[in-house]
Image 1 (cartoon, helix red, strand yellow):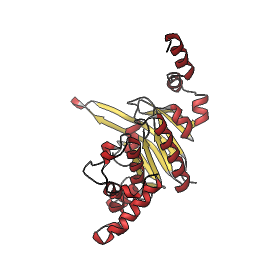
Image 2 (cartoon, helix red, strand yellow):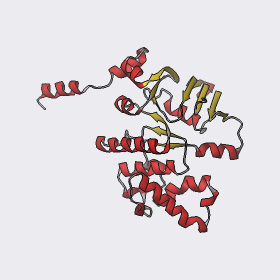
Image 3 (tube, rainbow, N blue to C red):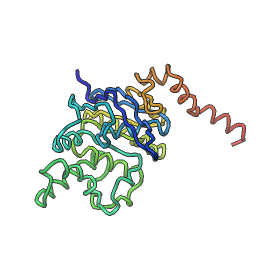
Image 4 (tube, rainbow, N blue to C red):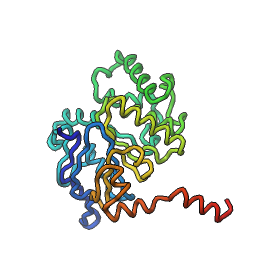
Length: 272
């Protein structure tokens, strides 16, 4: 069976001052299977975000290919590329920064619908559009009646739910989740992760989950790809990579994760 996403020898170089080249993504070969959650982990600057921008076709690779549903994304027409982008959506770490504060929630969530489906365009389609936005908001645990409010009227967790509703609007196959819970309180984080799991099961979604939080990755991911200096140094089932890592860098990442017993020992030593 053909993987849903295939990255083959994917490389991205940037030119700096004086023509110096920096390799942000270095010959990455990776597959993402239909319906799975693949986590990308690594320290800041390891190339995770650049890699997701390449697979979303927001950046052009220096070398290598990206295939979605078996189709090479290079050389597609504008119309074909729009169709591909409808099938791959993204949820960012900071939902507020990705929302126009002057737009009402109904227009924010409706953007992908209007962009990708001509049936939602024009004044005559407005009632149908509002109905669909209401359904999307309800699906992420918000009341349909909040459509006419603005982003600043919501909590961080609620804004992330709005971002998820917007990502779901064009019925994507793949959703890239770029640190989707790192800006949230722990209790809200758990609620959003539960929501993402429920939506994945309900809609048969495939997730590419970018995170530095290995505890979250252990909870949500089927497989883990570890990035270092733009390259994949280890990839495999989550239990294998996080339970018995083979690469020294993966072991370093795991060793750097604070353990609950260490916190307890420190608290006891300080009398906290």
